[in-house]
Length: 579
Image 1 (spheres, rainbow, N blue to C red):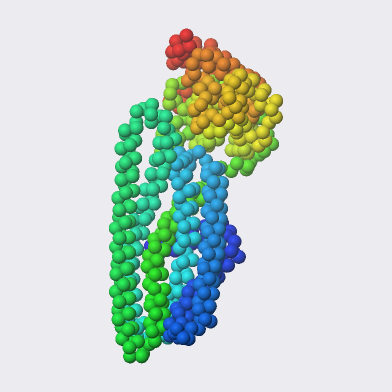
Image 2 (cartoon, rainbow, N blue to C red):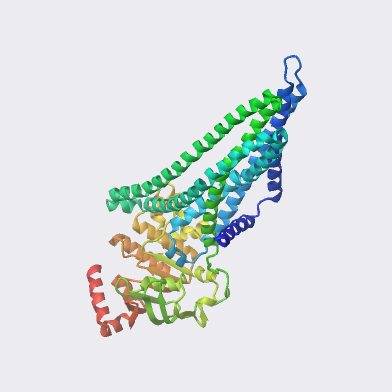
């Protein structure tokens, strides 16, 4: 257990060091915090002198001036220290978020198959904020609190060692109260943090799919689900409140009891002349400088445990293997056959989706992938895009395995248009130029819109190409979204096209326009198309029939109509759909 805690602490320290916070700012912040603490230790001594020498006829204005200077100096040092710590904390959070984002954006698709993207949002926002809170609000306070306690105890021993021994009776009592309650609070805080992350992910998911919720009449169910999640958080919040409700009154009880004892016992010693009235006042002030930090320590250790938990989750992401986007051959001829050779593939927890797939797509041809739902068509597209690598076999461009090519350069050659064409919240211009290093000229953009049969409807919109499309393109129709996706692909000028049932969900009029746009897009390009429409299938140079992950048919439309019973049945069904 000790080794684990040490490792967590080391991870936390290393994570903070990796953000490269400003050493000079940290040094100044620590220095000013120490000065602030030391001045705080001097103030009771000056107060002691002031009380002991105070009279209406003999006021020592130098002591009053010294007190004013001390208070002003303490306020300035404290204010600057807090500001610097805040800047340091914000810098650390910013750098951590940059590191996390740089990592998340290059993690493979397989990672997001295992973890919900909404959870990653929580890691980016909540976990980094926990680390900032520890550093800016608790870390320096812990060290200065230790200085304050040790300094106050030493000075108290000089003021009156007998009364200091009475004070020591209360310190173990405080520790006895705070340690078990602190442990309980740490356990509750970890659970609360975990469930808060889950709740954040849940809310993000439901609000992101709010239209599905409404069209499914799922409001009532989601109200119930959300209330259950909120109730879990409420229960943990109550547990946290119970511990805090015990800590505050118990600490207050100990301090007030101690104050009464010190005042009573100190009054007796003042009466016997063993201590001056100013000494008693200073003693009481120092007592608070010991007890208050002691009460704050339990909070520090709770926040430290939270930070360790956040560190573990952040480190888990940072240690994940990433896609090596720029590794591999950058110079290669794209107009070569694409050969899928003995390829099999299975996700981690499933049976094989594809089994021993082999075929070749020649440059400039259209290869149609057909077959029943769940046969592995989309998975095959994912392998071509190198979202995953085959578990067996390989895919080649000419003589080169795709694994040996630069991922960035390979994906630059691919234009992808799907049934659920992804549209980001933003303008039409931002959508069609998404991912491009430079915004193309106005002429190129208009040409792409024209070829995508999108120019007319785009320029009829109130703001034209600068029209906001809404979240997931909700302000556009299905056909309009498809044509925006086609315009995006045209601007990329890819050599390889991947069309994933790009017209299957459209009405007849939209389908005709989208199909014309696709015809423009496909000219002179190597095209893979997952097709349901008979017209698309018949026009393909090469048809692959997939059934349960196995190629059961391979040839032209005429060849398969003669030799493949399932294909013949499939085309008859599509003929009915196309009528």
